[in-house]
Image 1: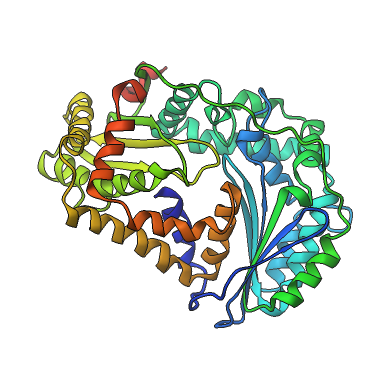
Image 2: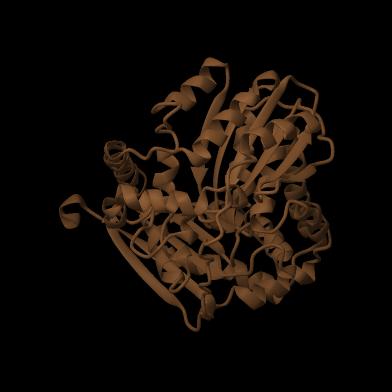
Length: 438
């Protein structure tokens, strides 16, 4: 799954440790939940704070406000000035960062375990005392707009992905990108950010996860002292939008200056822990779990229609999301042939369930990524945080149980149920020459 692949990248920079002890849960009177994972193999600790706010929580016309607020969280409080947060962490030998998704926003620090109290003090301060200076807002808004230009507007494939998402979702806020539309970003003012901050950055809307060489009883006392008096917010508006059933294929095309044609397809699917989510996860691995998987082997290696091809199920979402496929055509190949070849691979699984050993190989890949990732104390904490955001940290225990129970018949069944034309949104990138783009 993309989520796990993305998170496993952190293993390269976070020291490894052995299996973690049992996660311990604490709940403060103001609604703050704290999860502690003790692991004493290295003198290191990870502090993460998760807020239940992402692009799905944004008002119409202010897409990207959650991401811009993430940037502003590093711009200072009355006690700690702009950029002081990261400087203090770095001065103490640590690293820090944050990211925003469609469902949540997370900030983390990695420090020597005897200095983790620094994270507690700094995060408690900026949960309630963020300045959001108007001048800093203007400056950081420009930074985000430039980030959007570089990562999306100047990247044809990412631009096509945005077009497909906007077409696949009509009523649900997954319609807009996490970074926001350019015109929306430009419209965000200081008061917008402050209102968003006051609504969502409160203890009852947050979860703290601490892992590593710490003692749970000691760390919870420090967290209570720092966060315990911050008041809860009771008038937060819930997300009530639901996407209606799609009843016909939707197609979009994008003409951009590019070297090669590219196609993306998306099918609406349920998210974890729906019963079908496990089989959809395995289906994604059967189709696209390495160079020996069906999509790569057939379309890239044998037919040589594409330079790259993939299928992916992203099930760890708060609301129902998508099963996606994509491919970049090889030079001189017709993108329609590439697209049809992808459908052919899907139809094969519908007509005949994959072999038992093929399904077992896919399940082994998923399980290996899930278990091996937990050698990292960062991943231990992040795994608990992700599952807590989508329904509860204990759900991670049933994830592997569900994967192990998937049969070849289950894989074929979900392909027939969800990977159908009427449930599909397709986007095609049509390359143009520079003068044509102008």
